[in-house]
Amino acid sequence: MERYLIECVSAGKYYSRNGHSFAALSDINLTISKNETLLLKGRSGAGKSTLIHLMSGLIKPSSGKVLFNGISLGDANNKTLSTLLQNEAGIIFQNFNLLPTYTVYENIEIAVIPGKKDHLIPKTVIREYLERFDLADKTDLLPSELSIGQQQKVAIIRTLIREPSVFLPMNLQVPLMTNQHPKYSVSLKK
Ligand SMILES: Nc1ncnc2c1ncn2[C@@H]1O[C@H](COP(=O)(O)OP(=O)(O)OP(=O)(O)O)[C@@H](O)[C@H]1O
Ligand SMILES: [Mg+2]
Image (cartoon, rainbow, N blue to C red):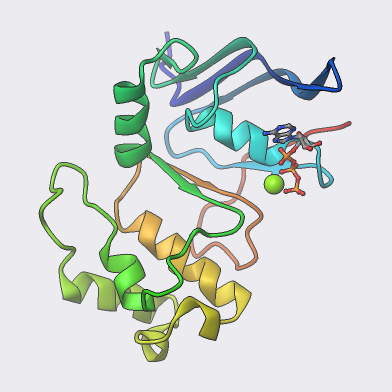
């Protein structure tokens, strides 16, 4: 049987509002295999970020299951979930989560290479990424001195440099610099 990287089985996430249960996402069934690209579509509020949070173990499903490498994230303990977030799931938040008083370079430098907590990322590697993403002349600027697209690119580098097994960006504003095209897309409808 194929082991999927990510598998959602009838997954749902409910929140309660004014005493009523409200579905942010319901009955999601999808699989993502290694080297596969999936495009998530849906209008604002359709549940795209919620699904990415579920896939990376940041939140637990209220119903159904979300499996990452066969591990059920709803049942996993905090240690397993934090290892997953640090080593496997390359999430890029919608607001980028850059540190405002750190420069572009420093924001990337703080990314931890899995299993090498005490090691800084080599300068040459950071410089290569900055060149590739056309940010070489922005190295010493603060996030507030960048355009939104440039801020997102810094967040992308900070994640890619850790070589996660799955890349989970939200609301990409810059073209993905990869030859990969989505094999399929999922539309979340509300
Ligand atoms: N922590 C939360 N508590 C309560 N409701 C939430 C929470 N997080 C999300 N929601 C609700 O779930 C729905 C889906 O939100 P989500 O952030 O996943 O949408 P989205 O598709 O990512 O939208 P956008 O394109 O605007 O980023 C929204 O109606 C939102 O109000
Ligand atoms: Mg979102």
